[in-house]
Length: 239
Image: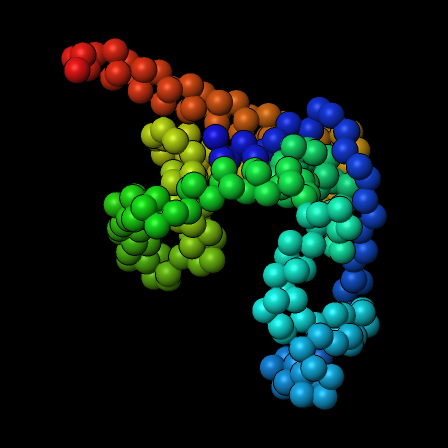
């Protein structure tokens, strides 16, 4: 069920928030000394200070207690932080998505998702991760032998996606279903960067359609897993 928090339906409206984005700027002639930048200001101003980076205001927090206060800042009667997303992201994820929630609602949903990342759950993923990795490495070796070059970043992203999908979405998926799942997920995320107008041929329109296909696949996998569990329980002898 955890995957549905990310792909929550956007049928109901949510509060509108304004986002601010930095304009692209030319790269500096030399790599910036970010650790030194922070260390000098930390020594001068203390654990909490204001500065500027790439022309934008920046607040740096290096105190554990203050970081915790910021991370939990949307909770309580007097919130000190607010999540900011583009209109396209809000429309595609929907108000019931974990990323769109805040305060007590966000905390409750996060507790549900946390069950997928306990020590026992992560240990249970090890065979899955090993199998997917060994299969991917064998495929990379064959491709390298045929083409004379190692697969690039896309191959690593495909492996990471497959592991996450198989771990967080219950049920087995054949390779065809996995490939279709990955393709629709890519279409979905590309819609984040467009204007949220569902005109034919736009990235946003394709993202909406891809989201519905992803949700349908998740629902089908959950239903199949539930049916398999129910059948196993019915076939088990009574204690």
